[in-house]
Length: 153
Image (tube, rainbow, N blue to C red):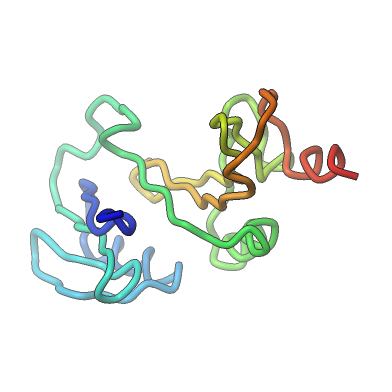
């Protein structure tokens, strides 16, 4: 397959320096920095995030324009909530599930992904996503990761 993963995504930001600091708190490194556009490595040489400073960061939200999902391993998704908290970043409500009931398992039939949702300082939607199973045979409702593991026992 030609596509190996997300190489580039872009977000509008209100303050370049503040944003670079935010993404450094997530453990990401800068690739290029200027006054109006900067790039942050997600995985050096494989994927990066373009940040564009603008006064218009609060235009109407649509997830296709202002959402990024970072791949994490399934074994790390539960610990990710505390990892974010240690960095002063809060998990947000998603799909009617409050932060304390996350991570969630999304029924992207025939796949199941564990997800955890948070925002950057300008309200862009960010997500940690971990593939759980790529071959789920039955349909299921969205649930917590705890419920997902409980149903397999």
